[in-house]
Amino acid sequence: MVVLTVLADGPRHGYAINAAIETLTGRKLGPGSLYGALTRLEARGLIEPVADGADGQERQRTMRITEAGRTSLRAELEQLSRVTQAGLRALGVEPA
Image (cartoon, rainbow, N blue to C red; front, side, top):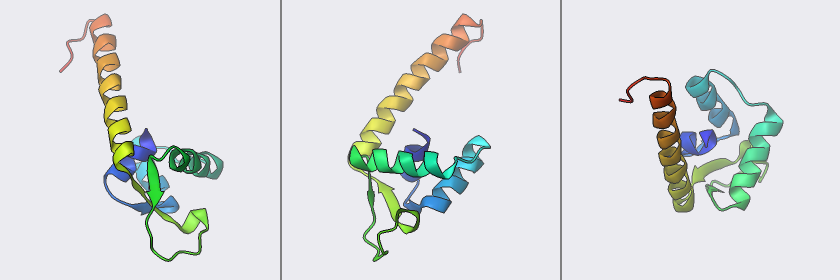
């Protein structure tokens, strides 16, 4: 979900994706986690490489979110919002 969120803001290559994740969450993903996630998201059709003439090495490819990725991200964020609101109510905090 974090990778899709970052890519929803525009295409990025691996290093820029990880930098944006660090800005968003305060943590960097390890290379195995990041590139494994990119591989899985691409296999599911949620992200795709931008045709930029790169030599095909994953670390150098610029990736973008697909329409299916946007749909999936929207559904996950809506579900997370419902869970967050329920959790806040359970804690006696009125959700905003």
